[in-house]
Image 1: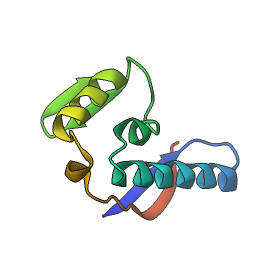
Image 2: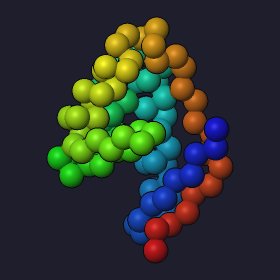
Image 3: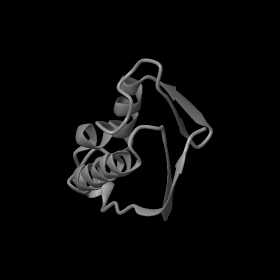
Length: 91
């Protein structure tokens, strides 16, 4: 599935490289059943809003708890692979 990434304005090449590192780390973590590692790419804040289907979760911790319920072991996560189709700045 193509993944569209929106990012702010610092140094374009450095930002893109950092985003790719985060996504690569998330792929590895997810594929190894490491939910906490996967969520390290998320904003670790009580203000995080995460939408899953029709459900809204507030906070990083609630998102982590929900992931643990839905994916209790490595056999439930499978292998994740992002395909980055585009990078676009947020204006």
